[in-house]
Each structure stands twice: as C-alpha cells, then as structure tokens.
Length: 422
Image 1: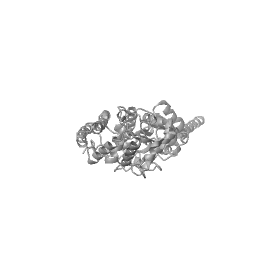
Image 2 (image 1 turned 60 degrees about the vertical axis):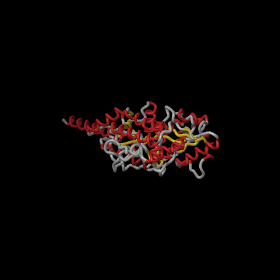
Image 3 (image 1 turned 120 degrees about the vertical axis):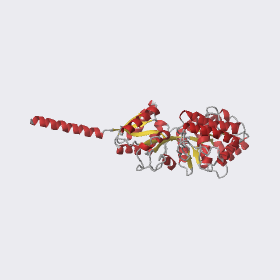
Image 4 (image 1 turned 90 degrees about the vertical axis):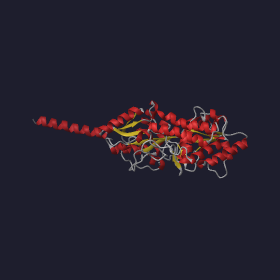
C-alpha cells in the first residue's frame, strides 16, 4: 500500500512537472496572411522570429482559410492563435474580437497609421507591422531645375507642376513620366494620392469642386508629361533610358533603376495638396485575438516585432518596409535603402494623409478601379469637360458602392452601410 502511494505521488509529481514544462515552452501561434512564399516563411522563422525570447510557431495562410480559422476560434470562445498578421482590410471585420493593445509601446510608429489601427474605436485594435507603397524618383540631372526654395522631400503639387514645366522648357522635351500604360498603376495614383491630397476623400467627394480642381491640376501636369506615358507601365525602364527624369510608381517598379545606377537617382515622397500629403500605404497590421491562450506572451511578441532591429530583419525577409523610423544598414540593396528613406519621410510627415486600398468591394474591385481609369482617359486623354465626366462617373461609382454595400474607408469618414457619393 505504501508503495502504491509512493508510486501515485511520483506519478502526480511527474505529471505536474510535465505540465509546468509544457506551459513554459508553449509556443505563440502567429497566424499570418503575409510572408506566404516558402522562402519568406522560412526567413521569418530563421531571421525574424528566432530572436524572440519565447517560442513562436509562424504559420502563413491564404486569406480564406486564415479567416475561417479565426472565425471558428472566435465562435468557440477559445483557441490557439496568439498573434494575427494581415492587411488592414482583413482586420476590420474582426474588430469586436481583438484585444486592446494600447498598453504596448509604439515609439516611432506613424500616428496616422496608429489611428487606422483603432478601427474606429477608442482602443488600439491592431498595431501597424509593415508597409509597402508608391513613391517618386528623379534623375539627379533634374534637381537643378527644382523651383527656387523647394524641398524635394516636402514638395507640393504646384511645385511639381512648376518643376515639370521648367524641365520641359530647359531641355526641349517633357521629362516627367507617368505609368499610364495598360499595365501601369495609374488608378492607384488617382485613388490614393491625388484624391486624398485635394479632397481628403476617395469616394464621397469624387465629384466635388475640390476633385474638379485636382483633375484640372493633373491636366496641367500632363501638358509637361512625356507623350509616351500612355505606353509606360514600369517607370524604372524609362528612368534608365532617360526618356524621363522624374516619375511616380510603386517601389517594386522603380527598384531596377535604383539598383542599377544608385548614384544617378534620388527617391522622394509624393507631393502634397490642399488637404495633405496623400499616399496609399499597403498597411499590414498585427493584432491579438481575445481568445489568445497567453495574452502576455502574445503582446510580448507584438512588442518584439516593433523593435527597430526586428523591423529591419522583417524587411530582409519580406521586402515590406518598416513602420518605425529606422536607420537601414549599408548592406541593404540600394533600392531598399533609397525607397525606405523616402517611405519613412512620407509616412512620417506632419501632413501625411494615407488613403487605404479599397475595402469590402469583393469581385467589384476591378470596376472600382475602372471608374478612375475611365475618368483619366476621358478628361486627360480625350479632353472632355471635367465637370461632365465627374458627374457621369459619380453615378457609376454610386451604383457600384451600393451594389457592394462597402462602408467608407480612410480617408473618407466611416459610414453605416454603403459609402455615399455626394
């Protein structure tokens, strides 16, 4: 009998020890829609997360399965996911089931991005994790033609127009280039740069007097734009051939120019208009679900992901840029260093006015983009009356938004139901 008691005691002690050991070594499940390619996922594990004090199980997933699992754990009231990583648009629908992270230090994170992470609440529902975006690039030959007193890192659209005009007059041909080709990302410029800069809106004020001013300003810029622009899609090509000296494009579509001839080019932020420095960040956030099994450890991982050194390793692993102000190492590719500095300046500017990627449109996203492309083709290429075109296209946009039932997203004010078009 004594032996049995001792045996039972030993067994219980062993079990308790094993439970304690299991608790101490419990992994934080990092459930992410980003870094899905095999190489990126492995780099996240080996380069980014290996420095965390605890254990992390990084598991990337496609959007559908990612959301399905999150919904299942939310409905069950418990789960294994400790940290979520996804685009702003995916995190919006989870707002009611995300923990408040206001107690996490966010030094150096752009205030506009942090506001987006509140998802319309008074709590920090997610914290920005990484970003990609569009910027400007210039051949250094163009710098001597900058307007007097202009700061290339704080240009206005009026100064950009004056710069383009001077270059055309001094060199004998237009030197500004724009990706207006069939595969160019022109719609993102109008949605996320021009409209926020002139209207503080992407949808609601589509046909406003401010929007009319914006299109007329772009028409003025177009008069000093390389006439081949309707065929340009990746501006790195025209920068390298020097068909153009100044251009706008996605960072990935400028990279070859920066990497091939880094000493010949500069990267800088998009210009500002009357309502701020509109730009379109592809914002990836990190959040903690209410059902996280170890809230303290999950928040510790979020804090770790915001550390400057971790942000740099994340850039190496994913090619997404930091959301905090960091000094990039010299061994980074030239395109990363140049674009990263421009992005940091743009997102950290006092007049930063981010316009998010469209949210909630589903398979109507292509039609949404077409509204802006059609407006460009009619107003700029065909020379039609701005007011007439905006009135026509606003009707198309209104019907589309009502069909999608998509609420407004930044910089438009949040709405109940479909985002209105005034």
